[in-house]
Each structure stands twice: as C-alpha cells, then as structure tokens.
Length: 314
Image (tube, rainbow, N blue to C red; front, side, top):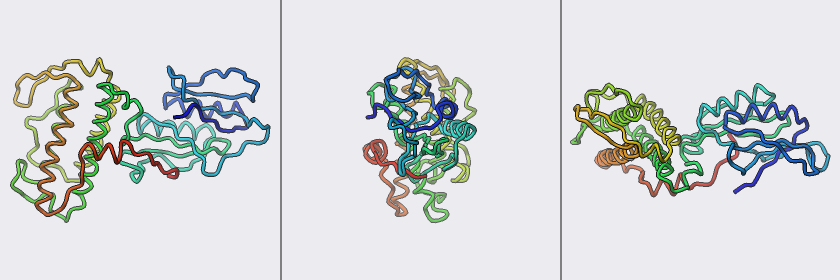
C-alpha cells in the first residue's frame, strides 16, 4: 500500500540514535540515502526488501518541524517481546511515554502494543497482532496458510473461552453426557493435545501418559495456559519455511505406538482437533441453553483476518 512514510525532525544525529534503537528490535535497518537536492534524511527498511521505507528528515520548507495532531506511525513487531524491547530502547534514547507495552484487547484478540513519542514529538506505535496475519500470509504458500490457520485457532479459542467464562458459576464444570464429562475437561483435552504435539515438533518428551489429565485446572488458569500455547504456535508457524513444513518427524503416540507426520501435518492436526472438540463444547452450551458464538473459519476471515479498522489511540 505504501511506498514510504516520512516524519519531520530537527536533529539528525539525535533522530539516528532514537530510531536505530527503536527499530532494530523490529528487524529494520538503516540504509544510505542518495542525495537528491532535498534536506538531509535518514531511512530505515526491512533488509532484503526495497519498500516500504521510513524516513526521518528536516522539513523541505526549512521551517521548524512539528508533530501532526492525529498523525501516528505504527510499526509492526514480530512478537510482544519485540514490542517491549523496542519501547524500552526508544525510551532510553529520548522517547516520551504515551502508553506502556501491554495488551489492547479491544482492538482484537492478541493485540499487543506500546505508544511513545520521538524526541521531536512525533507519535509512534509499536504493535504485534496475533489476530491478523502478516502480509506474508497472503502469498498463498503452504507455510503462509499454516500461519493463517494458527491465527484462526487462537481467535476461535479466544471467543470460545470468553463465552464459557461468562456462564453462570458452576455451569462449565457441571457433569454432562459427553466424552470428557464437562466443558472445562473437554477444553483441557484440547490443551493437552496441543502440549503433546508441541513436544513432537520440538523433538522432546511430552510427559503425558494420556490425552487428558484426571482433573483439569481452574478455568482461568487453563485459559492463561492456552493463550501462551497459542502464541507459541503462531510464532512457530511464522518461522516455518515451506521446506521445513515438509520435513517428516518421527514420534511416539501416547500409547507407545510409532508415528510419523510432517511438521505441516502436525499443525493442521492441532487446528482440526481443536475445531472438532469445540463442537463438543458448543453442543454442551446448547444444552444449557446458551447459544455459542460462531467460531468457524469464514467468520474469522470476515471479522478478524480481513478487518481493516485499527483505532489510533491506546
């Protein structure tokens, strides 16, 4: 969409220190700027890509620079930790706080951001979005589709858990005629299987002797663990190349039998497995009765993946 974005600065050396510190954790590097008759400028971009670019320069009209009211530049971060590192680096090099790193759930599940101003007052936002796939997801490759599906799984878990946690006290644990006895134990089974296949992908023992535990943790604790697990799967898929996705991994099933799946097949399994058992949860919700939220893939594509509105304020 963009070729480049520019902000006005008053001191080139000061801006270089600030933006080098801020943008390095985000994977951006400074590139030389060819003299073109305009004022001196600095430029950053993602290594290996020509566009888009970010420029910091003195105003062309020679007048003092000034930040625009309502203008903000938002940089994408590869993770929440990268948001924190970039924010801390910017603050240590002359930045001014406008909103400390943290989740902004009202902008979407998995939205994690920070706000600050550069030494000249330009407003900067650093954001990691687990709810919306990167542009790379649009390429159509196998690994790109896996990245989209990991985000779909996290989104579906988010709206499902929020609905379950809003149920009257005791309903999520009430015994029902279903495979794992109640809603929480069913959700725990999903998490245990996620743990098992994460261990397979990491090439280590998973420590489970069954596909569920005898007693699930409290719902709030389980939800916290699921969120952490979803972030891991998203980060794993983001790192996965097409070649690595096709790599065959040998493992043992919980019953001791030998198994072999590609990394892509494992990721597809955890998505499909979660969707299957969320169906069991939906059935139990209808029994209450409590109509479950729509959490299938077309709804995710419409409401989250292809959503375009992002509020400008923290």
